[in-house]
Length: 378
Image (cartoon, rainbow, N blue to C red; front, side, top):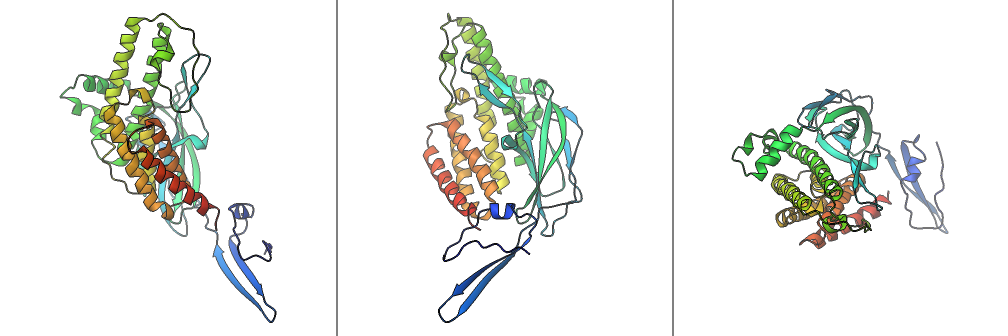
């Protein structure tokens, strides 16, 4: 039993989450207000229980090695929660980009920072199968974490074994060649068959995996062009917020520029092809919004490879996802609303000044402002 006086002589009271985080040992709470009048004293009380997260379970993955088309099995048995388990979500720590200002090239770095996590799959079942993106360029290791969530939104985070995942370059290059040459046999490609499934988990996983490889190819293409004598200032398109570059002018190598543009157009055509598989997926839950928006962020990362077709399709989808989020944000957790909003903001940033982006940003601002206000209230 702990008595905490939270205020006197006031008719309003707001409790932040820190009140509960600083007293995790307390599960049963009673808020009581005492009204004092000249002739009497009256009291009113509110009792509630702090929801406890799922417990007593474990999670594992098998096999521990594979490629981006390998089926990995996730098993999370024995989890218990008095309210029931709602779902299991798998996240991985993907690569992100550092841009160095003293010379223009991009380093693909890997992080274990949970704030950099990307959703890969979600399922109401404790065992499910996934396909994973390639791991660290040096070690091929991919760090994974699973969120086990109960019906009322409390989450237990489980770190599972890192796995070795390498890119399936034979299948990827086959896909690029067939898209470039408009091959009639493209449906025989293993990746295309997966993309055509219409399953948003499968489509999202393949879009994220392929986008990672395309983004790396784009960086390598840029580095190769620069090393061949092409000025980075003349050929690069930086993302919003990146710093301008100062580089010594180098004689233009026309052959290298032709090769650079050929590769750029080839990768742009692949993004054009891939975007069509994600824009017609069903939007079902907050996890669905997060997965689809994360896929779009990865797909649109190389802004100089976005054609008018890709820009319009992604901007429309970005708007649809934002509208769906705005419609349900009062019914989902603050963390889910924030995660989805952050991904959609990044997607809008990648697209820059495209039709409907103002509408997207307007919806997101409304959602975030309301969520932030609600987050401070009990």
